[in-house]
Length: 328
Length: 109
Image 1: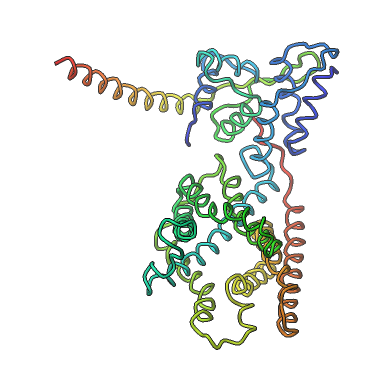
Image 2: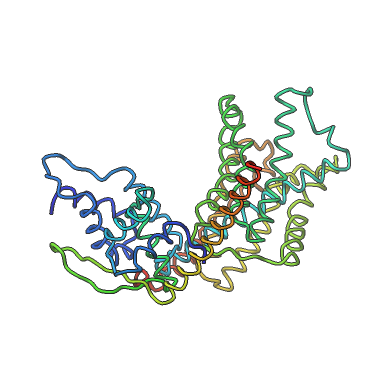
């Protein structure tokens, strides 16, 4: 075996073993024909474009593209569910932010002088919120390319403002956690909804009521807390992302009880990990023992259910019989 | 099924005879006048999709210098899908040509 063939086989190890078992030999044959005989002394290497092509194929196959075995089909479904859940959560909070601005008009929330960076950031924040809401609607209506563009636009101001905040060193860990919480669902959308996925176009009747109900459940505590100056201090642990925790926990328990298959368990496990990541840095900054105890209880709940979901998802994946890649 | 340009060219490459992976890459290169040069990773993504849709199937396997070589052929469904896509593209091209002709005639008048 020549050096170049060995190197091509190394590149092909990027692909899942089940796919390699079906395709490796003919892919090596194609690579070698394309390259011609190159003596080992010349130190031939696969071109970067070829490596990138195999990497793109690997991502697609691992996320349930054509030719993927059943465990990877389930992983792809989990990634798409995570994208939908994450984007819907962000959309719900964006909607709450927009609702809060409406009764008082836009002017009070547009901080800073006209033309200032502060004013620009406020406008970008409102625009990003509208994009986040539109992204979920577009996704549920089957307009995947539009959903991807809107989701990226929705997360862009948060990502752009992260660098200055990070440099200022203010609440660094918390900022990283919140950025990851916002960015991961967008990445899941970008890679999970690849060309082999046929998007489902849900009827408006199945899009708007669940979105409105979900938004109401998630944001009502936040709106009530903001409107009630004398709220007990512990309540702030249950607003914003804190209000997601009970909803997530109920969904997690339902998935565990019904053994709903690998995709829901894995998606909710990943969502739990993201929530836990946003909560842990706050433990350091809580002033009262009661608050700390409540936050620790939240973290314990998140960690326990996340692990249980991961185990259930992994077991269900193991049961999914690994089929060979789609036989040509 | 949305037929992308690499899928369209790969189907076209298989119209006259079964071809193996590198043979498809070469034929696509020739058909497109060198404009589309399929990467091997891209080619097998395309073959996976066409196989899953039943538009191409394995024709035969051969051993070449100790390596496996698989030849693929177009199915009847593949030929029909290609015919429909070619008709759609031809209609679009005809519309564009007619409009350009009208524009040229309007400019000359």
